[in-house]
Image (cartoon, rainbow, N blue to C red; front, side, top):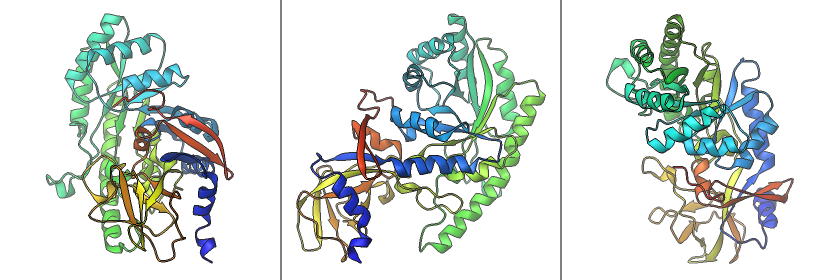
Length: 406
């Protein structure tokens, strides 16, 4: 019975016997299952899926999504203009750069990509950004494309409470139209797309075991917010189009809101990224379900007590607000726990073992998941790729290719 309980751990232990640790790997059987699942959520919606590269940060696996996913996958959302150039040179096209930039080096890269015929839109939410883009475009003799970002945050009962990410200051239809109208004064830039990221819908888990009340509360807030911003997004898009703006793309959503975003008539595409690795923070949603596919392994090097082991390294903490949810998630063997006063350490990570945990010896691997998706790639130069119980390849992460774009 115990062997059956720990069958997955024993499988991965066998696969990586003799390999140097720490190591990171992606289980392609699970990765491909996520690719197919994300596609299935949009099968009859008329929407396409844009891959958010920041949650992958591995060229080979980004390409694999398009190869395995079919025609529903179109375009990449990137984190910087430098990353966009890197992916364009690798043969990908149709980009939205998700975060604004104004530095001269990025403007030079952006105009260069546009001159080569690469389809790329840079995020913008202010006149200042549009002006800088216009000046760069005019100097290079091209028209740069901008993606207007609108704020999707929820303000309950029209209060100052802000539920959502702090990104764009553009919120109302009037504010969106005013900025779009001002863009007509800048001949080197044109707004061709609109994005609204509902991070407060796509991010928070709402089906966590043993948290019934909190789950219901989060679902209620999500439902109220979706009702508010879906109407507002439609008003913005309808207003822009009625005023003569040719909006090619209306992008929305994230991995946790694939179903709700796709129901909006004006949305043309949804974004998915973390869904493919399904890291620690993406396990418990009511509307969508992903299979964890990306992991890292560290070796057992000490036994400080009969119910503990200490592993080498492991302190791969995720970005965001400080909290225990940003620590790595001990995954296999099941039932392990980090020590509250030590957590995941820079050079060692102690773990409390479950009473039914298999006997761990020095040198044995312990498997973790990172809390977020692509950030694991910033810790490792390569991913082992496993399929059907065997290592089939190693592929470089961005770091392994010598890049750190952010």
